[in-house]
Length: 216
Image (cartoon, helix red, strand yellow):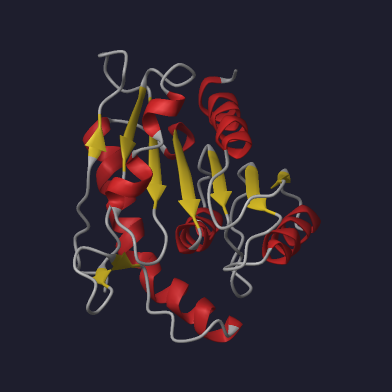
């Protein structure tokens, strides 16, 4: 797994200037990098100097063409999910290190954004890093297992109250766990939203990223 090299779409800063920071978006199960790269235009006004990188997960979902997975989901058993996230972490960590070197930014100038399984990966990798990332924004996801917390970046979790894929309770439990561990971890519940990124969450997410990356 660690030898796999991730690829996916990149989007240069809207300002046309050299990047002052990096936002890495991590898609959900059965999707691809193009999916979350579509978030960038919504955040251009707030984040004009940010580079966006949206890797495809390391393996294809069997039988679904250009759809990818960070790890196979054979069940929603917490032990299985935690094992999958741990095993997928090294390839994502290698990608992040390479992207930061490519664009000349540090972890404190890099934010992780995930959706669903991508949120599981953002939390797994982001919390285990001894040097903190600027922030972690997680949509419709979960904290799997009992991950190592080596640093305490700010975290914003966003979840629909009618999510029938990953229940709202997953983000509620994650927020409580992270807060108890001393992190600035907040949760926004999108009313009447299913397993998606609703407009209120998109706007709050952009404001969060501007705060942690621009100091806005």
